[in-house]
Image (tube, rainbow, N blue to C red; front, side, top):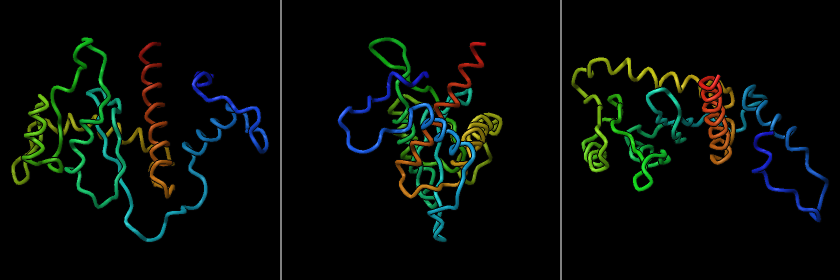
Length: 187
């Protein structure tokens, strides 16, 4: 098992029964992530939630944030950019994105200024203006990554009340997407 070395050991004098073996536990978690079983415990006729996603030019998810469905996309722009883990590069300077592509939902002059301070070129269509030429073709990469993420049926509809449980499923799904891409690239 690839993740076996990073799992904490079970304490010898822990109270209660022995846990289920790690492999069976992970198989159960992956089954739930893929198949989405049971009724929704959070279906209370309230507003839902949505994912905000930033990915690289190939569609590899770099950061996903879950918020209430009525939160504007523009409010999460800087959190997504700042949440990107540093990419290995020069030891003194981690690599950051050079440009940020976004649709009109991300149009904001304060965000543009903040992105420029971070030396990131904002390529974002302005509200009320024609779309930037060929931006739709580039945005397709993000939509494709959303589709990959929501193929995990547990993520298409949020079932967990606690955000940290849902975010754990999101992180696991992103890890699986990255692993599949690496596996495909290396074969």
